[in-house]
Image (cartoon, rainbow, N blue to C red):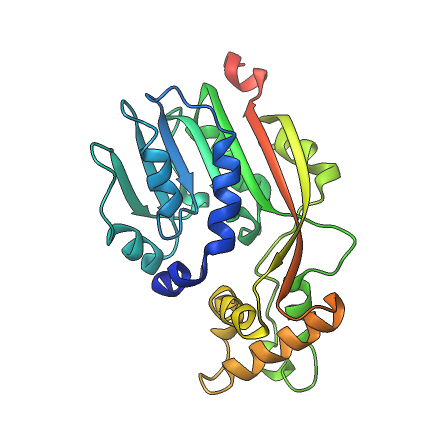
Length: 264
């Protein structure tokens, strides 16, 4: 797992924060829950959750040490019980510990989706809830798929020999089956076609530079900016609007299956 630039992420994460806040606004909380935020990033949303839990607590988990360092660098809401840990969802060992587990635009960076959901389901109490938000598959070629296409061009292929896609875009039509394989049942599912205008190609490039760490980590430092520019150029030829990002986002609410909950 790539160690993302936590400080850089804070600077460019307006899109991620807006999407997570929209989902969080729909999440009902009594205020005494134990919550897990998987892929918490810089902790902005984790703390927003904590502010709604006067009698509860929230744990932010992220595989990137620099993300957790950024999360720990900020003050917590008054009276909130919030903690941050470095950890991969696939290494999550908690069992029946959390009333609510959330993940905002992080799970598409995990190759084994069933294993990730299995770990999340295992950590969720039998009467608990899971809310997942992630980029999903659709008819358009995604930004990440465009990045992979650039990797295979003659100018860049030598740097990416043997490099596998570091992302998975699940098929929404199969998500219920995928969740069932992990011991979870989908109770609500929505797919939104999102258009986000960064305002300029430069701003979009800045956002991509932070988000493409899995790719640029394979490049010499003096070539990384050129590769990002090549991806941005290829992507904008598809979209036709400088600075515009288009993607499909899956939002799903899940609960532990009755089989798991009954202990059979």
